Image (tube, helix red, strand yellow):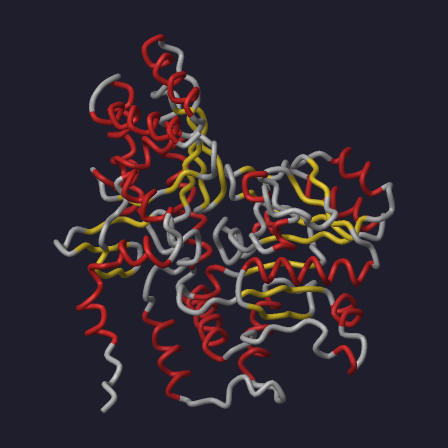
Length: 461
């Protein structure tokens, strides 16, 4: 007799093996890394902006699953929508009909970008970027897409071709014939456009790696240059979109900017069902899907599935009803201003930047001799170790989860759920201040851990 599948029992019986299972069957470096930095926690449950461990200790999430958990974890409206769509037993993914949910979600998304007309639904941010790259090439008849140094647009082969970080690209050549230009450099853009083979420029209005904004006026000027040369502006809003920066899309911070293609994902999922979307102008879609023979020239097997569409519709409903975008703007300004006030207080703290609830905290070379010698020791071993030294005590001592904003960067990125408020701001600022006090005292466990990181970095060379 076949035993009935019981998920709860399976987790109860084997949940404690989680790190061993990963080490044996998945990316073996992940548990190794987590053990090394002391992030090998066992979280039992989660809700909103918090996790809890088996002892009932709460942890503040300032990472939001790299931005996926825009509404926090297990928002009741999104949960109910998924229960409802499962209970409806829809005839989903027949491939030869038109279900209502994709059209309804597209309508809601396009209402936030009235200059755009159509949507393609895939399953992730990198798929949304791949779609934009293909559409831009086909619509313009040109092969090359420009991207910015330090950009991150995904890790599949097409999106990797417009990834501005060599560490992700090394060993995966040959990639597509795309070209990097410095963020904000209009002269570099103009030079490439004059070659006549550029399909478009893809960029993040605020780069996730390092949290760097496009300079004021750059997006509008770049758009005008691109259109003058019959090329397209592609806005990658996978992380910055859906309220993260205090507007629905980050490109909306600059008046008159109307990208030809916009990529979204992450928060649209509600943290449950992967979904990506590429929004674009009517003429681009009509050129790609130019006849019935080309009806499936670009498609995704799981694209537009009912669960993903229901999650997306629920997310947009919550954003409107709970004024999520306004909360991100107000709470983000509060957090940023309180952190910026600490820059003059701590010589290791260089800058606080960003918009809304996408904030970068950058550390820099101190002036005092004692701290400078220790900083130099860390930099010689591996750039980015000091930021990691800050991230670890934030979790270990203060139960706050954060991340270093990229390899070899002395920047911590804060991208909490967009539902956080003054309570979470207070908790983070108090904890961060305590960590900075310890770092500037010149001793203690924090610098001892720094020595451990140095040994690990040297051993990995």
